[in-house]
Image 1 (cartoon, rainbow, N blue to C red):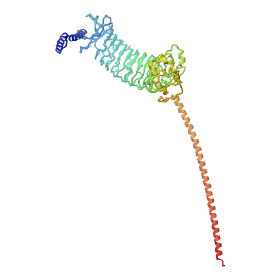
Image 2 (cartoon, rainbow, N blue to C red):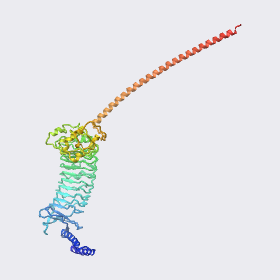
Image 3 (cartoon, one colour):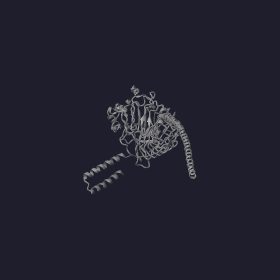
Image 4 (cartoon, one colour):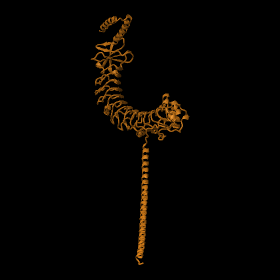
Amino acid sequence: MLNQITFRHFTFTTKYFYYRGFRLRNLLSFYYVIISLILVLDKGVRVSGSQKCVPCGEWDNSVCTCCSSYDGAHQSVIIRQSDGSLLTDVNCRARGLKKIPDFDNCSVEVNKSIHSNSVVIGRTDYFSDYDASHNNVTSIGRFDFACLTGLRILSLSHNRISVLEAGSFGRNIYLDELDLSFNEIPKLEQGALDGLKFLKSLNLAHNSITAIDGQVFQNMPFLEEIRLNHNPIHSVGADTFKFSEFLKRIDISSLKLTSVPLTLFNLSTPHLTDLNMSYNSLAILPSISTNSNIERLDLSGNAIDSNDLHQFLDNATLTNLKDLTMDKLTNLRYFSPGFLLSKATLKSLVISRNPHLVRLDEDMVADTLLPRTESLNKDANHAWEKIVLSDNRLTTLSPNVLPFAKARSVDLSGNPWVCNCSLEWMLGIRNLTSNHNALNTRCNDPPKLRGKSIFGLHSLNFTCSITTSQPPKKGKSMSTKDIVLTVLWAFVVKCILFYVGLWLYGEYKKWKLGQTLTMALSSQENGVKKRLIVNTAVEESQFVENGVNSENKSLLSQSSAPI
């Protein structure tokens, strides 16, 4: 069939290019390319009965699974191995599969050699590693892996799986690792993961799961790692992680959680070493007071504020903590490293991209909790990997807040530093800062130094007689103690002002009363005087009138007398 098709195309192509006027040399070159492609394809097609298989590339000691895409009715598997050893690994990665290939009678056809036509039967229960990732599989049925009873590692990531039937892995009891990440699983049905009694690692990241029922994992007593990150999960039950006391790594980052039970990790996970709760919307974090083995802790991207964060870390027994990350905490306004436990185990601290973090306090650092720089420098065995304080709103920083001199890498870039004498110590850690970070560690004040790299300045540039022109602080947060003292002082001042006001009001009333009495008395005196004046005037008028009358009478008498 292939030869007939090739000859027909050869004849048609010759006539076409001949009439088009192609030169013989170009025509021969074209035929050479076409014939080479045909030979490669013809060599690649292997026929075994009615089944066809596409070769998987170079032959080596590993097993290569070839999943046919030519036979639409049957997607079967042919496995080849060059040295004839027992089959262990099955590779169906990126084969365009729409379903998991079937194993007829739980056996496969195996060629012992690339040049040999002999066929032997291989047992599928010898397979330990099956990779069917990067395909288009949409569902997993109950019997898809029933023949692969010896599987230890199964990867089904980057498919389109939306259905997991109950008992899909019922016969894979020895499975250690199961990867179902980057699929479209909306919900874990009851019994979907039954049978995985010895499973140690379960990856369900990047799916469409909205809720987790703790009973789904109850038959996995030896599980050590579970990844649920990047799912739209909005609730988690209090008993979700109580199924295995061997859990070491839990990733619940980038979910839709706004709250979780405070006892989510208590007692049920005593061996927990890695905990990632980042990029949720948690305002209150669950207690980890009994998880003393935690080595890596990521709290980034949550809504916790400064007081709750201090309380969370203060109550935690982090005796083995090595790596702490607090990135993009939108409500974090200040942080006191004194809340960190002073262990020689802490090696990495990342506090970056917190848009409202304006200060790191030194006054709360206790020698019993976090040793100061001098005491840490005496411990030659304790070397910090990195301290990152980049892209916050810090304006000043004390060298005693953290052991900068003991870190292999320090990043202070992206902060609006006020370059006065309190930051002169930064010149001593220039060798601990990369060139890129050093270039972006710039002054915001004083104006004459604005935009200049701190590590490019001289010690004489760091003076303390400056006035900041644009204070970069967006706000100031107070501790609970400060708030209580402020309220008490405000109450006392209010009481004092109240009593002073009462006293002043009383004095005013007295003065007002005195003024009223004075005015009354003066008005009375004026009335008496007025009355005296009036009486005097009346008496004088009467006297004058009497005098005039007597004078008139005398004149009349004189005039009436006889002459």
